[in-house]
Length: 129
Image (cartoon, rainbow, N blue to C red; front, side, top):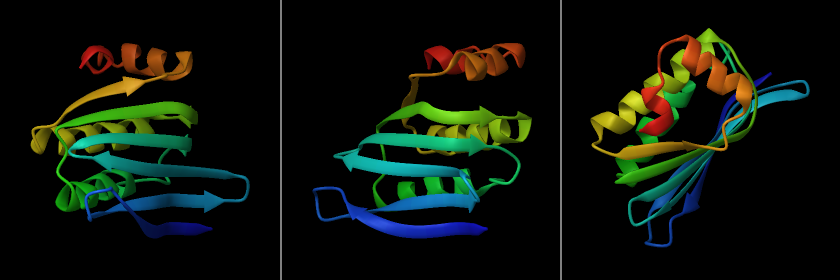
């Protein structure tokens, strides 16, 4: 298992934004990619978002905030294949970090299973934030 592999990409303004592979375990992984352009971020999540990710997702978001503070973040979750309650908690921690940085966000391309998990937990405001 590999956990917390890190790298950096340029944001076009001379800043480097962290790119983090949160974990890899056999054929499953959870990865997060950041693209930043003048405070406009695109974050793409992929793989399994579960208890093994822990606080790594929020930590990766906070590290990116320190480098390139966002004003608006689009979070693409189309490639997320699995989310459990611990993974949802990780996502909520990352969103709280964005709110703490006064960034607006939207979650894009949500699969029905994630939408259902969010609805069942009474977090519908995430769907329209």
